[in-house]
Image (cartoon, rainbow, N blue to C red; front, side, top):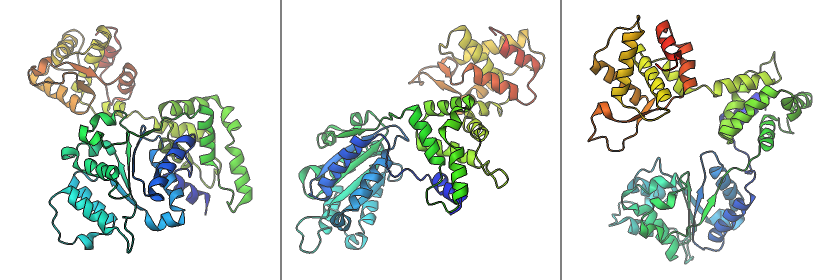
Length: 419
């Protein structure tokens, strides 16, 4: 395998490390829980909670891999993977459970009165030959919080009910980003839940993060070209990085914003795309350039495509933010600020009718550059609904520099202290 193929598999296919780092106790806890279901037929329910990219899926996959290496477990246990983004209601989820358990033929044209009857039939059908008990099933519910939005939470209620009543050995494993997930559960569902939660909050230090950068860029020991292997791995030693303060600053910024492998893989893939046959080593400048691309500000980029009227409204809001120290504003205030500019300073922009200005204002809201602060907007006239600007001073000023043919008086207005 060439080093190009090796990295494309690692970064493009998001190949995660075999073992999650710094989660030894969570790993041990989850493995023990699932072993009790898979080996001893004891039902359990557990939630794995943590922000996106914290390693929830990586931890679970690692535990499942170890579990399925046990001979008897491998033959008996049945993992069923559901995702709240895909199985958007119970009917779709039930079809998917039936498909993954290979029971479509067994179910055939049977009609069931309720979800509970259908589930009970599926678990009964898993009894093998002379076995009196059903085969253990691991229900893995990704985006677990989305299942709480299903009608009456029937799916969750029945899965947890089975795990409570020992009809069959099942483990219900939920993965979620919502720290308040238990608040979403109805009382009858909550009472059937073991309330077991495994929290993943990254404790990775910056030194460990740098070590991850290095290990992800390293070539494996079985790489065929030993000379290239030695030169390449030597060029990415941490000491080379740390003698380049600008690079350390950039990596520190990435570490502060997200420590997960997905964003690290994106950064490293962009850096590696600058390596070529004529330039076969990775240089600190490659990582700096990759970081610049990663950190492109999508909100600031939207500003380059705004009409000049919309840009003027953003500047008016910036001045209101300066004057009132970030307090919310409404359309009327923005319109007044804009009119003052037209009367006092503008030579390049003609007057717009108020409905046209309102349309531009609403477009900024659709683009999510401003957002409404009122939860119930029904009673308040559109002109007086309170709004907040979702851009900061530096994003606006940077966008003005790049804005195509921005009139000078508009730029001067943006730079003036108070409108």
